[in-house]
Image (cartoon, rainbow, N blue to C red; front, side):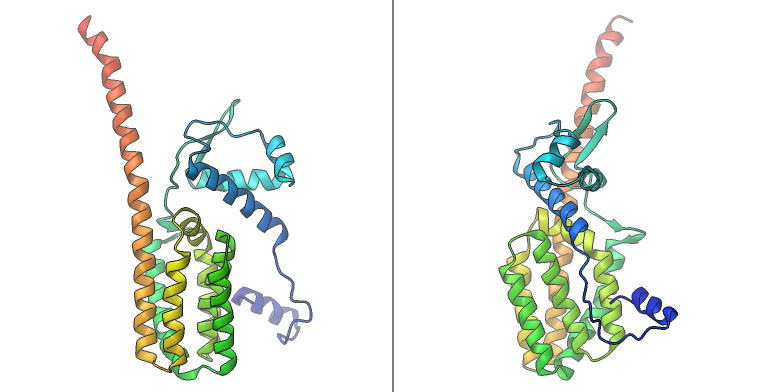
Length: 271
């Protein structure tokens, strides 16, 4: 439960005890994410090429077996990522095979978010190593097992988030958990893009396992250092994606400039 949820409980006068109905927000959101993930996979693999037209919303709705509103939401996400563009009266077209990396998430830059992650998650790993209980180790191991067995970007993201939240919970300080949960929610879009386009699943799982082994050994210094290395790897992956995005954009601009110059030459010759 996030901080905002806790406030809502307090304002309603209800107890914040165990929830008898552990509901999961999955149906509509998961469907839109799945549509988006499949379309991103087709674009990245080259089955949908730049300037290809996507099928109409009605056809996508029928073939995916979801409502048009879910298709519309997924297409809106693709456009926000710079992968598609809507052309008036013509439909939706692939505009790039590489997403524009989320150098900012909402009003927050990726650099600022990573800095905050280090401030929270490195000391959290250190504290978890010296305060963890057997139940915490079991939860961490389960999250890691699910991460290693994940077969989709969404499964990878959920298990990755669960691992980081389990470390925060193992500190015994509820504020660590609340802050890390809220931070993971902010990072969700960026993480999904990264795991979809440049999967780090196996590498991230290995990094998580080393952190877990240090926590098991009650070695706070090692756990903190390994978490710092893990966040270094995340930052490198983000920078790599950013470079991959800038390259085709630069080439398109150069091509357009060359085309504009070639169009002007005949006119200049007739002057």
